[in-house]
Length: 352
Image (tube, rainbow, N blue to C red; front, side):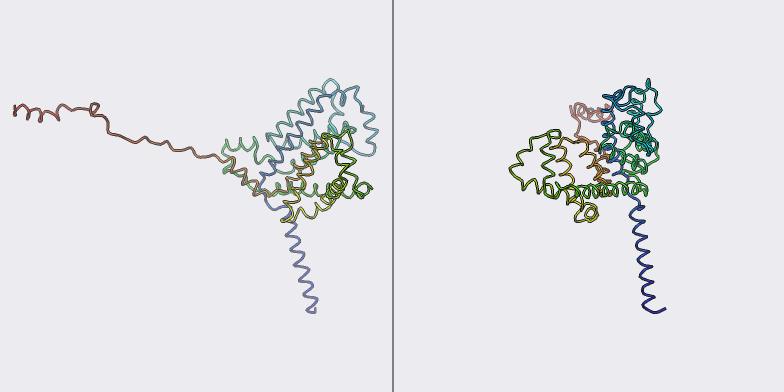
């Protein structure tokens, strides 16, 4: 074999080895599960809130005279398998089933029996969404995505009742949980899924003319259905509408590339905070904006989050009691030994 051929073979071997090591480090390098615990709490709170809203009109969605009865939903879902435990719940048991679901979601939020309640929370989320597909929006889809990946990783290893109980039993030591490969896997799955969401959201927007001519943001702001504040003043500043439209589309399409670059990551995440809080503030879609930020939080550095949370929860040592300075007791309170004073009294008698 010639030198050139040997060099090419060596280069390919080194490239394959580096790619394999990089792939393994990306998915399976042990990571602090504290960030996963934070995401579990935030996701759980959103699950509790959204399913409590379902309960406000539960019979209208899941009752015998619901807006979408079972035959109609099954007809809509023809050709696709859609799991929902609501197909098995008798009409007289819809309220107990809903109450049990809420209890499980609360247990998942606080991190009690997390390995079990995380899986059940995912099944509950998709069951509600598939039973009432006409009432399912992006919020429900992100809820299902996050709850699925939280069930894969050790979401109850930190900031949970499970860890508190383990500490009480003496099963864990230290302020920070042990790094876990499955925690990194769960976070990476959320990372990749968020990249896919933003990439395809941006690409799909480019199919509409309004995103090319800069009018898309105006159509959202001028829609009274979504108005929280009167944004029609922007009609007198078309350059501002065009700028907001194009910045949004550029941010979504470039997210998949720039979010992995350390120098750009803070800027990209800050842009996400501005965009999603702006959606909540101006268009009233607070729940969707907040749950997207929960997904974006998976890109935060795990070690930094773990250290910050550990510092906040670390028990401060109790101050040692300060001893009061000792002073000589008053003379009147000193114990007087009569025997010790007898010679002096005798001397006084002799002098007299």
